[in-house]
Length: 259
Image (tube, rainbow, N blue to C red; front, top):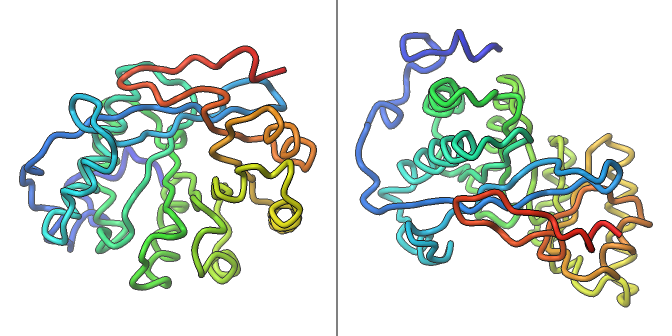
């Protein structure tokens, strides 16, 4: 569906009172952006928007202020500000935005502010990835699958983050196959010397290949981790080896990380 036709007055945005409540969040947020690299093309594939405080305070300091009462407002504010920041920085690659599925009441209605922000800041919706953490406390998995399918129908990419960290990973994957799966960094850490981690990740690589899902390894910190995962067939990577998150800026890839 073309975002041009999804406006405030169109039916897809009707029916969700929460989406019409334009209230202030109550605290300030900003974003750091961390590159995701493609080893095949030796280029930046995407940037993940990571929430921070207004002066670069940690994500934890921000998330600790999120409650049941402001969860929806926080989720919506993150989407808008992540897109605005990416546009202001002139990002040309994909933009990955984390979302809170428990803050989405009706996918077609709650996406309104995202479309409006994309139009306002001229950031194409086909360059936006919505990702959710597998370990997120999902109250209704069927609801999450519906959100993913609706977002895909609207033209967004979808991703499951921290795959392997939660309990419902394979069950969720059986119901919905996202564009990208991000391997949890605990499986990545020291994988070059850990037979159990190697066996688990090799299995995930095989599953993703069979389902035509792109695999991304996050939390890469050493050349040895990079080399093992590259040889195992993982081409998309993210981590301090390549670039730390840059606060309100575009990070520069360490040339050594490509070799």
